[in-house]
Length: 362
Ligand SMILES: [Zn+2]
Figure 1: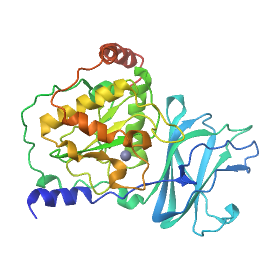
Figure 2: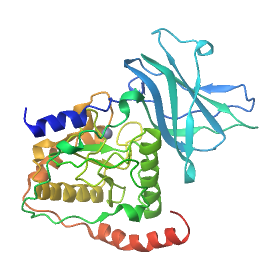
Figure 3: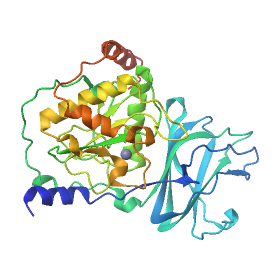
Figure 4: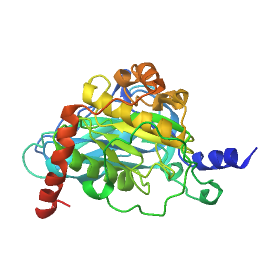
């Protein structure tokens, strides 16, 4: 085994695969609000059986009322569970502007089973529930990323660059927090496509806020050192820098080494079925072409998250179906120019960032 292969193996080994929690094969989404009596609760549908041990249930979405309390439990029998007999765990919840939230319940041990969730009313009246984009189950102990393989990474080798670098909103412009630990250097050799399984904002203010949400979800919800992806594309086709593409990311369990993670804001999967629009496609192709030329990455390496882990719905049925056409575009010799609409939006962005800073937004 050569040094690069050893590095790739080490670098990718520290992250457990997450499983999208489903009900009848569809992602579990939506939580009913609980009624006024604090002892009353509303039970979400019991999930399908998850055949891999998990000790953490992590969900994210939009709360309609911050008074909602979310609890999770695991049923380890395949029959109809009795909610009263389960050990319920209260989820830690972080709420952002507009009710954007993530919630994390840590179960006492790792085991296979089915996920149950319920909401409780914390005050008086009825908490109106939540829109849930995605619920995931995984083993947290294995999910912490390890940075121990840093020294083995070779320096990036620049190659001839034909395709221009598309405009990318830098970290300081979306209000990124610093990484919690130093990064590990990485030579990009392949690309994985994701969706955020979250909101698909097109307005700049909302997209900047969503970037800050995703970073917090990854740093404090998942416990990673930084946002997991290297690039994120919003609903209007603006590209944001996540981690620098020359450092190790955290986005595909066991396959992070050399792997550039690109994520589309939105949920491109039933029942949400967000639109993968022409401006998003143009931005993505521009980014893929630049990565191809700047880092010598083969279009054949560009695949979807679920191609590594069939238990995740990421990047959604709609985007996964586009990947062969996107690989074909990536094989094309020249970069397309950014759409006029995309350029206009990018020109507006600095002023919006200035205003957000002045308002103390970040
Ligand atoms: Zn993914």
